[in-house]
Length: 180
Image (cartoon, rainbow, N blue to C red; front, side, top):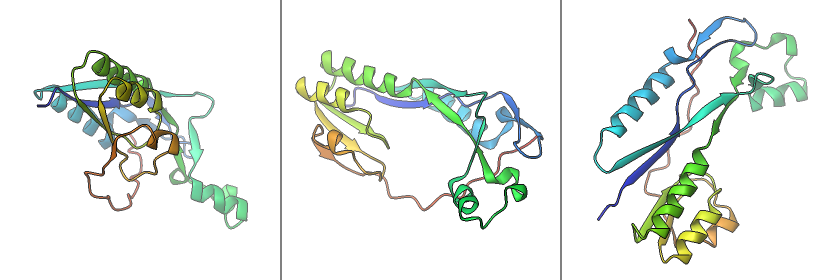
């Protein structure tokens, strides 16, 4: 029997900003990604046995944009000139905060209260060694679906099963940021 499904994410960034080269205004709340995330969170909050845990997104005012890796590589190889860069060569530097902490606290709480016998964590990183170790010490079976990412060897030794329940997605095309 399902105790509860948990969905972890961060609120979308909803402030305004400016593109790095053209300096055109961006209203992040009007982007398709922000609209999608807000609708997704709202839908999930109304589902039975679903808990939505949201962190926040921040931007460092000293580093609002970073060059995309391929662009940086081209600049280093001198196959592109810095003066030829466009807005599309940069990506915004959003940072999720407090999401991993919420996951770890929920795993610990469920394990210590013995609210489940199996925890299945679907995550693309391996920051959960302490939580996985605690759950297993408390007799919980801990299964990881790494979303096709490599599993850190430190985490691999603290899980009871590795399973990928989702088909591997094709490579993503990045969409340009919408502007006002």
